[in-house]
Amino acid sequence: MPHYKIAIVGAGPAGYFTAQALQNAQNEELTFSIDMFERLPTMWGLVRSGVAPDHPKIKSVAKVFEKVAAEPNFRLFGNVEVGRDLDIEEICPRYDAIVMCTGSSVGKKLGIPGEDLTGSLSAAEFVPWYNGHPDFANVEVPLDGETAVVIGAGNVAMDCARILGINPIELDATDTAEHALAALHASKIRTVYIAGRRGPEHAAFTAPELRELPKLEHTNVVIDADAVHAAHERAEAAGEIEKHLASNLEAWRLIAEHPHGGHERTMEFRFLSTPKEIKGVDRVEEVVFGINEIKGGKVVDTGETYSIKTNLVVSAIGYYAEHIKGISFRDGKVENDNGRVLGTNIYTVGWAKRGPSGVIGTNKSDASDVVKLLIEDLDPEPKNGGDITVVIPQAITIIDQAGWSKINAAEIAAGEPLGKPRVKEVEIAKLIALAE
Ligand code: NAP
Image (tube, rainbow, N blue to C red):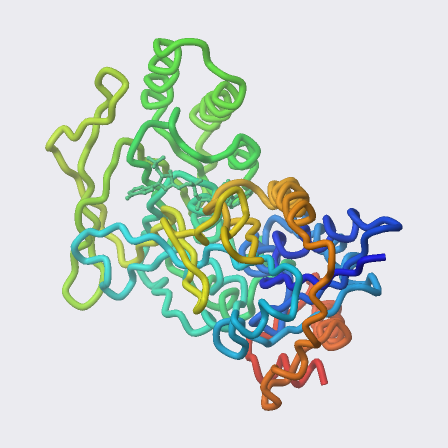
């Protein structure tokens, strides 16, 4: 019975769903050993360091990941960075296939003057900061001004705006990183603007995210009723309104009609606003927006501008993949053909394959599609290239599944007396110590 060895690089949703698809594909004639490599001592990728802490239900998928990891054909190599500690060239001959599930972690740039001023951040820094990613624990997030501006009209922008705009007491019982929770409690920010360059009808927010806004207990949520009305009219004029747009337009209507709660905190949507410049001397002081209009279905610059005084700008306008030595990248993704890296035994799944789109569950079907191709491509004779452990540098402390389980249990135990799901440890050395 042929037994194949598969390496998965990246312990996020794409990685675990790939392992699950491999496990599910096993039968009497086909079995797999799965080795998963992860550069951090902590697992679950975006489920740990991306999903907003006030959305704990989305994180329950981690139970599925742990079930996959508990199978006897699964080995974990945490704290091992492929491309640095271990070269792709060392991995390829030892496995029948390698699946790159390394995501898309670098924030796209606006490319406007002032973007590099202190106080101008990417969501790719801000989100892992509040979620306790060890590489971002020391990001400087100035919360001393009264206003923040979030650029982008997608669900990541919405998460950033909510974290800045809700009363931090709503985060006390969550797994928000302790450093971020303390900073948010001291925050002076009371108004968060969310700016989209097109109309409300074009926003990438999804309806469930919009529908939760009027339910916020301590934050006024504001959108100009005329802007919503105009969006509706434009959408109708453009033809039949598809289901997801109809839900979004309805959600916008509810927000526009929702009474101002008289709260101290406000989240306000501004559409048809393109960021032109971030101004300031030593730090962000103002964002200048070009005002757009929609003519003949196209977004057109009116030539007029307005500005918002602020000390904090978070741009949430998409991501691209961080390059890994030995892998070819193109357009911000691993260069691939439906998940196959042509001419190699390498495959890719998730945001590394298709770019930063879709929800966590999207990776499940993505993984199963790519695993089908991988199985089609397998040689009749497994490679038998020798065990990987001999080439991992001895100085590296490998976090195996037992070690990660200890970290996980210690964090959960630390959260228990505080009524939190966990308290995240953010220092690599301390995480490693917890695993030992
Ligand atoms: P996204 O949904 O693609 O949204 C990106 C936004 O950035 C769009 O509104 C886009 O506007 C805007 N943008 C791009 N370039 C810009 C520029 N130069 N200036 C101004 N605006 C610009 O991406 P995302 O928010 O990063 O989310 C990534 C994926 O994760 C999405 O599929 C999202 O649904 C998912 N996600 C889901 C959840 C959830 O389910 N709760 C939470 C977070 C993320 P245009 O449309 O005009 O280009």
